[in-house]
Image (cartoon, rainbow, N blue to C red; front, side, top):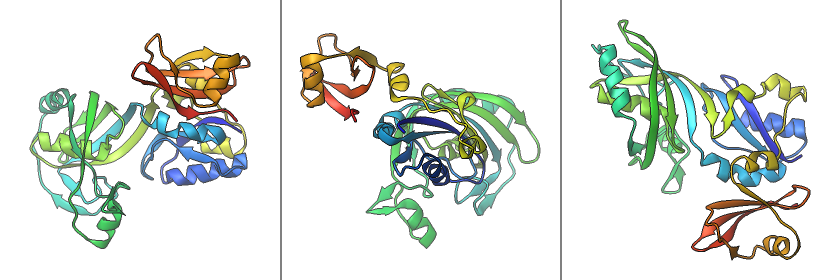
Length: 286
């Protein structure tokens, strides 16, 4: 089986749990997801099966959309409500102030990677440093916050905000939550997270865990997915042989990425722009 499965991940499950369920259902070890969701998070997990695992890197690069809830006045070690509370303080902020900060933060900036993450520093994953109580300089990554919109605001003793976020790849929502609080001169932590979109994939089209376990899920073919994303070329003869050999070819139209298929629409390869040529990026032929 080759293709992409959209999963509505449940709270309490790890992304690895979902991969294991699909691996068991599809009777294959060639399964991979395109972006981790923490156990407390829910929503869309894009899973690649069989030959489609070659596309994990491609699909991970897409922007993502989330529904996020956060509480002000609390700071935890994990940057979410499941962690140990490090600090509590009262805060007086208004809905108008929050709205102004959300508007001002639709920008590109250097975001600090959370210590409870799998990013490696000095050959060790950051969460390994955290679990041992060791100090480490946290790396920063350039991220782009494309849209932040308030969904609800509850100005109680510990104010609660729910908002929509559209962000670039590599954005840590837990860090974004702390950054929002920092811009308001206070502290905050994430209380809920739902991923609703990854690139063109929507949570509305996702299968539940129960549907997957019962073999009642939809699998999206490599052709169906890539043909909606990139310039698609049907080729045959000499050009097909060149592509199957991974040879560089002319890029007269100047496309950034081209998806090559044969006459039966079987995926052959993804090619990327390389100066005035196209260079093989992902070979997809069986």
